[in-house]
Length: 95
Image (cartoon, rainbow, N blue to C red):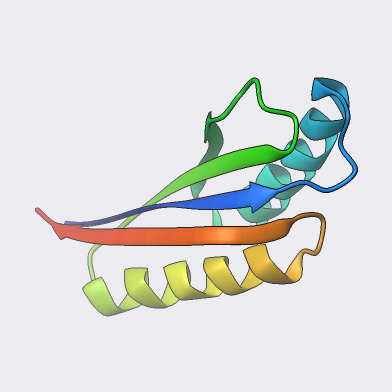
């Protein structure tokens, strides 16, 4: 079993409330979940208006497939354009 985990840090410009942040984060999370069938959630910086940390996890039986899907997820996360991508990190664990 191969598990891929990662997180993406976003800077949300022109966001002055948690309601505005929630709208952007929900749109990003929904798109990534629907496209990649991955577990995706906001995992950190919950009370900071202009920063969002989105975590995700994928499970598979082939390391190359999981790595490829995670790369595609990172590319789509950057291309969404709702917020500026600051940092991305991933780790693949073979169990």
